[in-house]
Amino acid sequence: MRHYSPSQLKTWLKCPRAWAWRYVRGVITPPGAALVVGKAVHVPAETYHKRGMDLGTEWSPDAAAAAMPVEEAADVAADAFERGAGDVPWETEDEKRDAAKDRAVRMGSRYVSHVAPTTGRPIAVERKSELHPAGRDWTLVGYLDAVTEEAGGKVVLRDTKSSGKAPSGASGGNIVVPNDYRRQLAAYRWMWREGTGDNPDATVIDYVWAGKRDTNSATAPADVNDDDETLLFSLLDGMHLMVKAGLFPRNPDSWACNAKWCGYWDRCIKRLEDV
Image (cartoon, rainbow, N blue to C red):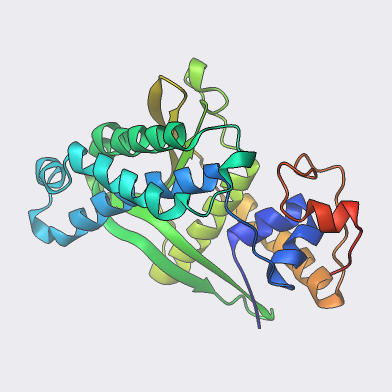
């Protein structure tokens, strides 16, 4: 039984050969600054919602805010950044280590100060789910960032994304959720329904972004539906057929096929090594 995840599918669609280097050959490349910053932002968000769940029936917006002060969120983000920053080859990055840390701290704090207070009572945080589609010999595995219960019992499935720039459409108040985020939410929507029997009432992306000086945030509705799940299922089926056949074509037209963005480029493109 082959196990897949939304992040694996994203890698596959970008370049099947890169997927094979990582998941067939097991070659792990050093993390980039963006990955370490993203994880550092995620930790205070996760901590906020986990502490909210711990409050149980005592949960309220004020109680949740008291359980995770913004000042502590900054420290949590800074600590998480330092745990991962040592593995980053900073000499190849466009951003200096201290600047990346500063952005991570600002975005982690921004989530707790501006995004978290707009969310309802958490009912699931970092929940691991597995899907075993009938008649398929593959499994989909994922972790739901957070699911909250809003006013009127509305269940909202949330995913947090961080960036060094504003998402497309943010300036006009109409953020466009990209396809890879929609696929990820489609997987989580599917997982939630399998576990509870019901679809969430809404799927959203909680964005936080920070440049050199500015820090901002917004929540964008994704409105993921059955068509998104059908497409996800089809993509996974196609991926699995090629994996079983041992077909891992290079994708030299991918934006990531270069020495800067792909840790496998030297052996894959320059030396044309095979997996």
